[in-house]
Length: 51
Image 1 (tube, one colour):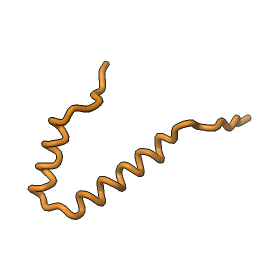
Image 2 (image 1 turned 180 degrees about the vertical axis):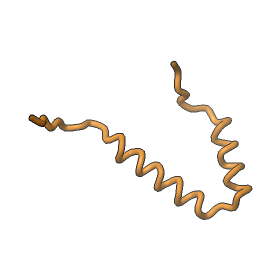
Image 3 (image 1 turned 90 degrees about the vertical axis):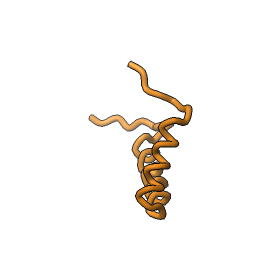
Image 4 (image 1 turned 60 degrees about the vertical axis):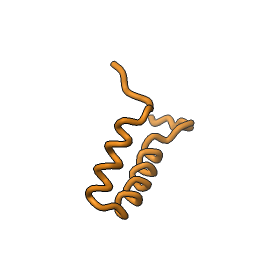
């Protein structure tokens, strides 16, 4: 018996939207611009995973 519940947050949908957005940004950049983008993102303050 399957019970269907209503989700408040769709993690898969969110992940796909983020991936599509990032792909659009990166498709217009050169290799050097992509590397600079990720270096900048790595240094930016944000949520970091913890154990």
